[in-house]
Image (tube, rainbow, N blue to C red):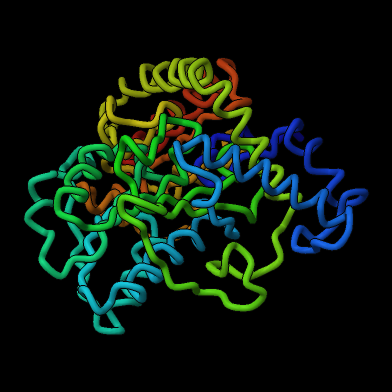
Length: 385
């Protein structure tokens, strides 16, 4: 029995065979602990980690010493937000973020509220974009951090990161950016975009799960963070725990491949996305979620009016693997779609298409046909009842 076409690449991606090939020796022959400084096994592992750290740093315009390896973007976000809050609480207890952020940003902010911090959750416009004037008005004398994601994980909207960074720098407020969905999809440069902390992960770019990174600026300004994990003092004491060498190596290789192919892959994938949209936008009850231009090339998120969401997803299950929102919030109405004005019923009748490296034109045509057929069938059922 054929497996459904995979279009859930926002949730995760398969490991690229070249990435896996690079990782395998570090599970067996080169298995040393990179913190073991007294023998060749440790030296080999440390050299591999250092090389991957350089790749990650170069990919965002940073230096290697500014990269902290984590277990993923969720830990990176927690380390950035809680770490800054703890390190700067004597200077201010106010944080600004956006209603459409990932739960890995919203939940740490909510936790900090229980400790006495004030958090401002900014609304977005109907197209999902943040209004910079509203952001500027939200920044106060006691604001220590602004956290805005580069690319939304549900509707693919690209926030004006460079303008946000410029504003934060002028206001002398630290700027954290969750770039889990953006890395190797759009150009990122922490210097030109004035980003002080940047969260990354490997499994969205055909690397392994369980590895991510946090960039922390070292100068202009030097950013301090309080460690959230204590123990062996790895990562210059900012994130203790034995470094997972195979995963780190895989992260580096995935980034290397992704950056080398970014321009050509973005165009190919955008062509697929546009082909899918051209086929689906003829459906009378369809609604596009998020701005079509300021958007990740591989993202298409749509809602349908007056359609049974559960029946829609059930009807598509054998043809295509996708979701109606974030994989981390399955079963709940999307807070992102609600923030741009969709009703709970429309949230339930939403589809998030994440087109990927291994998606073909034939896949797109098959999925478009399947969606059209199920929508026609559900509309007919509605008319007859």
